[in-house]
Amino acid sequence: MYRNHWAIKDVNLYEILLKKMGEIGIQRRYQSIKQKINHDLEQNLNELYSNHRRSELFKSVIIPQASLALQSSLSAYQVDKVDFQTVVDNQMTLFSYELEYFRIFSDYQINIANLEFLTGMEVKDLQ
Image 1 (tube, one colour):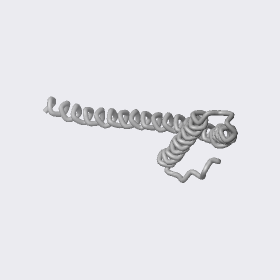
Image 2 (cartoon, helix red, strand yellow; image 1 turned 180 degrees about the vertical axis):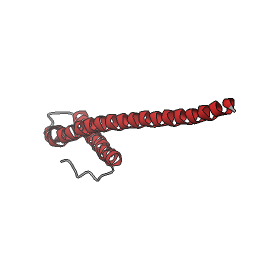
Image 3 (cartoon, one colour; image 1 turned 135 degrees about the horizontal axis):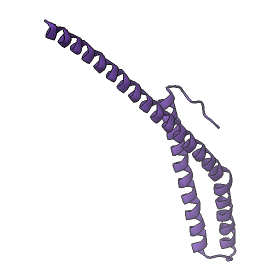
Image 4 (cartoon, one colour; image 1 turned 30 degrees about the horizontal axis):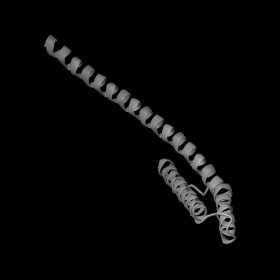
């Protein structure tokens, strides 16, 4: 009888220890998930602001300058000041800048979607 008494206490103690270890594991997992979400939010916000600034730079500075260079080369080509290759090069440069702008802008939109996913809230356009 003495032996069974300790066996029951040992089983109860063992169950209590398992429960406590489970709670500690859950708390650690919660903290790990919380840190991951915070890291993802910070990284996503940094990318969002970077892509926003870059898209604005392309839209307001780089593409207009490339467009002016193309117009200038077209005018110069019409009066035989530059060759056709210069016009084509300027057109290709403009196309590559426009393509890069849309790639950056789509990344910006993806960042907004990721931010909405991470927060569970709708993000109003940050522009």
